[in-house]
Image (cartoon, rainbow, N blue to C red; front, side, top):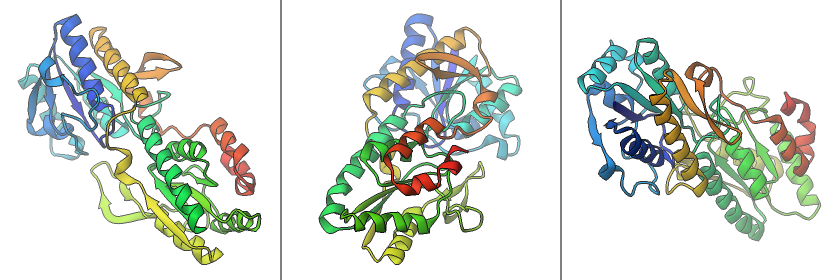
Length: 357
């Protein structure tokens, strides 16, 4: 078979491991040929392609980013965009397409499947919020980066008697914030699932200082919401929306720092990790998981499981419908919130009913 492949949406560590696994098993076991479409759906839409073979994927396992590059292009928003994608697949003689991406990328894959394209998906989102799978690659690396940053700001916060707010990724779900906050020993963890009361956050920090703990670490997902402003509205950058309708988030860390200092009088600083979480070499866990996804995807192609996505369930790679994967965002498990409840102070206990919802 001849198989097309692309990586869409935001980059994350492990993408190259997926590409490598697909090409190696496809070549050695199935005698497949591959073509890579550059810059996500833009490459398929605008006819930008490169050959993918054993030489191309040699040495890419530990590399971050993606050799195919990526974009947030949405063919469904372009005149006859989906049809042009179908025509370009035919032009390159592709019998199937493997699309690696999050809910936006896979929503386009689902539309192409409904238009007759033989497509298989691989889940990719650094936020770990894609339905249908237990974990996505890149998440573990991002958590390790965030945890390392929290460890580092602990020492300077303690030395200067400061409050430090660490802003991490997480548009709709607080997986990175919860994992890194628990692992890093944060004093407050704020996630999109639970709008927070800034006055209670400030009171908790005052209580810590009264007990002789003269510093505090607050970890906040970028999508965390104030409970008392516009029904928990998001903090946005004034930069418009992407082609999938997403507004660019950012600024919750700086806003929190300002409000905490105003309410407590304690010197407060913010650290925004941003794209640092996306960069660099994938962790060992992500290399293995991404490789397993790639092997699962090429096997699904040869089992003709079109319109499905490789998924991790327990410790098994299984096949789930794309429609199921893109139906909703996966929120932080209530059990994991209970883990945070067990180590955080009264702020979390006050919000416990809301967190359980």
